[in-house]
Length: 401
Image 1 (tube, one colour):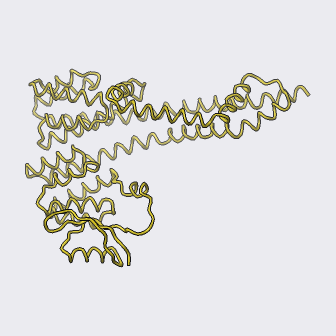
Image 2 (cartoon, one colour):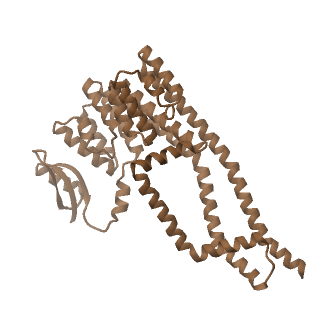
Image 3 (cartoon, rainbow, N blue to C red):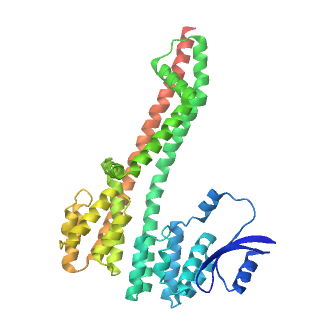
């Protein structure tokens, strides 16, 4: 007999946890159902497990959310009742997703709305997501909203995949260079330079620099690691403050090439989500408030909050965007003004988002194109420095013999 931990709800809707003995998890679920309990999750209570690894395996990935939204939208559009659609999704999902879906299903069966049930899982469903589902439930077009949301998430996933894919090669090369340099300085160079010290050879300046650097890294590498860790920890603490977060985000935008790329990526997600929310019937003020909190950059987030205040005072949305040229480019304010005149703000924002997306892809390609020759140049200089530092003393020794 095995012991299983369970979470379940009784007929009154009260959450219950405990353990039950049974040969299998399926048998344990049936046993709990006979007691009048609605099973939310069952897991093995016996054996050794690493909590860290368990949490990592149970983490809901963005791809899981995309797949869940698309499948739910398809089922609702096919005419299936919400509870039946959630039951089917629960049966076909992996364990981590299954737990969340089971909890949502239990809440919906107790009479709660889908958006309210999802709001209990803020680490999985963002405020944007919940607001859109709530708007769909209120207006009676949940099927359409879920379809739009699924399309938006798939576009976001595709865009993130392109950006990450383009940056994989440069990152691997840079990390590889750092690892190789560390190995050379710690293990290889000391063995070579020790020979020169025994022969009392007259060493060139490059070799002396290499030897001094290698000796320092060999003797003080724990201090180097401690200093690096302290700097990283201090930076994290500083960024955790309000002023520190604002300062670092402002500095990010000032980095050549990378800063403008990051701003364009943020604006792509911002305009796409804002377009989706306005098109779903969420008010502009509420959309700005929700999306502004979700923007990861404080500079843009603060600008969005100020835009919401201006709109609340009666100013046009395009004018409000134009008041913040440091966060929003002129094309955004111009296009939104056109959308306000034609009454199609959501469609205009969607087109602007596409423009930003194309621009981001071009900038990523330009960045990778610029990084590759720069890496080769740095690598060539490093190799030349090592060759001169190692070979020159050998050449001097052979010529003096």
